Length: 518
Image (tube, rainbow, N blue to C red; front, side, top):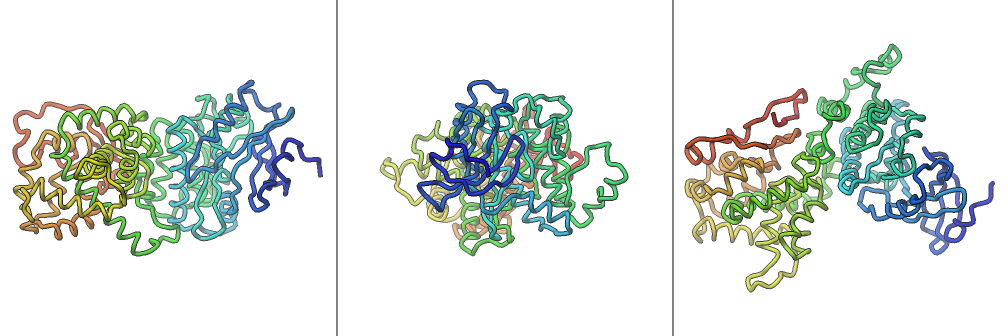
């Protein structure tokens, strides 16, 4: 065995070599200070790197990239010959091991695949929000936390490809079916969000049918023998549609946040066994749904028109890819600009993220803003509240406030009076810009007269978010971007009928799950 580099010997003991990766060798090390802690070390020969003298500084900067589904870089070292990138050790191995087994006739459950892909996209969404892209995603880039059935995904090597190989020469020399075609062809000289999404689609393809996709136009006899579209015969149309959307040309692929809204992934908040951990978890989802729906109903009266306009403008400015969604860290930034109490913002955005997507549209951001400022930021005396900040604790307070403000302090409210009270300028813009249809929401109460706290709670908790983006099931992200003249019927004929049940300006695309703005 070759002598270990002395720079590593200062902190680590060598255990064994794993093999090669795109830019060098992979080894497993053990900390001197803790014999039970292992690390993965990736060796990069300096002769391969063309980024100049700032490589170490940029590698050290990547240590700040922290997320539950990102395999974090813990240390960076160098000597005269190599850079050493040291990261968490993942006990469950790589997803590439799954792909090899699939080629031998094994199968993976769709829900397991959806869970893995969803977790990888969550990591990507966080990384992309700070302008760190992967550029070289492979099945081996997705690692499992353990060998147990409840293992989760962590993605390795974010930012390394662009830093170590800025011209993409290594990627082009070692062409992979998981790399976006526009990157391989040289049409685009650097990876970005769209190329990473292609790679995720290609990995999902391999997990579902046992092989990577064949580039368009090059599927010859042997490729067809390996399956072609026939390989999807045992998979759902929904999973096939999801993969096809991610493999579209670069300017037609969904963003990471929008991909999370696809029915194949949406709602995949369970363990990969497909069963909610316990009844407590199910009850928590219902309580979060109740708080979210109450906030939607309270927005028209609780949030002044100009205040909502300011929030909408800020949201649009922060939505850099214009997909109608922002990641958690951006939503936090928006709300912290409106509510100084950090704990209030943190609690509010967790509650409105009912599906656990870490992606926030304008509606959920507005709901979180209302909850943070009106319920968590100050108590009855104006002093900051002390937790708990859970949905189950918030729901009774929101119900009480609902009947105080919309029920004229009565213990019940009728549907006609509720309709009348919600005819505000804010409600108009919530429908127009936040994908809410109050008439769809009101249809939940048609059989209730009057509506009291018990019936309201039961209906909203089990509503599935009807009339809101939470329950829309839309994937393409329909948004109204230009307001036409609506004439004189603005407030007549039911609540904002001019929106056409939120269907204005949308058309169905080739995907049965896609709705995009004309």
